Length: 304
Image (cartoon, rainbow, N blue to C red; front, side, top):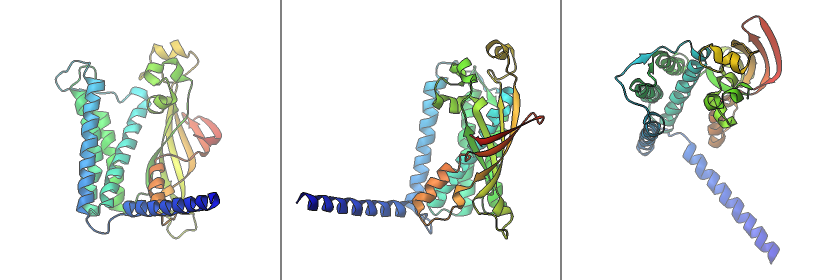
């Protein structure tokens, strides 16, 4: 009897898994026409996330600092522009995610770009508004331009090619600089991913088959160029760098590498398509050539 019960349990479990997977597949499948319930759900969800983000930032970040009249700052020279690269990446990915959500709801392509893509720019730029009224910070014109660049990169490709041929991506590796100033660059790996510009690399990953449609190049193969920097303990090149790491020098890094466009991997599974789309924001580790300040070339068998 015990064996029969076990077999019955396994059959029930398998059947439930199949039913659950089918339900998820149906849920993730984009609507063929406008699905008002889905569209309203997307709008409400995005509004709720935006509201929670701004309230949370105000309570955790801005509340303890005095307010001021709205003002701007010029921080374009700080962190060797790594923070600006981050803004381009974030604005692009938020614009794409918002547009994809509306596409899933069956919203027209025009409205996807008009409302979805611009929402990424609006959400990031609203944070600059909070900065602008804080005496400790200020609205960064450079950040606003970087946000606009990220959104423009997404929208222009949809208008020009009706597909995304060039995708901003991100990669990260730990560095010794974070331990020199953990309160700014992060005390844990999780914090360092977001704070330590020395370990971040931002990429533009181009799908080669999209540019050469008649070629035999694999549809998933990309060529990526990356930008990074190191030797940064502070935003500017001041005495703190030599105080903590006397041997370090601030330097820009440029990379050339192969990559994979996960969204080009053919599959009928909407679950896999969703997973591939999410992870396509990350550069696949692969052999890489590094150019430091254009005068020092280094080969990486695998670069993260």
